[in-house]
Length: 188
Image (cartoon, rainbow, N blue to C red):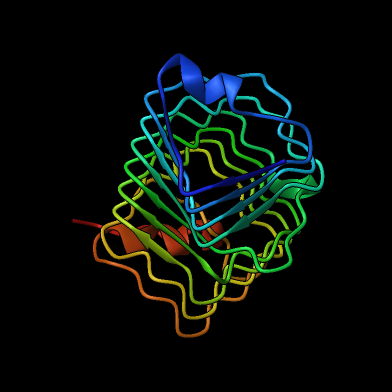
């Protein structure tokens, strides 16, 4: 099935999802897809606005040039997606407990998002913008964060010995957290 240049709103959002469907230039607004299976679907130039995408299945799913605005995406597990051409922007989204393990996020950006408890283990986040994001309890282990932008971001614990940070941008005073793994005591 192919859906082109269509807008789905409210209950129509869930009804529009079909196994393996292609969605191009579609808008999904004010809907609830929580717990649904979006496996093998392909979304190209689609916008998700105020949609609940929590705990969805994404095996083989593709997102190209997609935007997510004010969406609830708890437990978002991208580890099984088809990452070819992956490009997405997330603005004011709740991505708590999202799983980005081993994913190439180079073409993603996050602004004013909650990424609490998110797992970025082995992810390639080089050049990714994480503006004003909350990273409380997020996991960074063997993560490539070179040239990533953490301006305004907070709550992160990133061990410079376990992650690549060359050229990454951080704000003071939040950047002091980068010294935590070394047991450094900083007086105010």
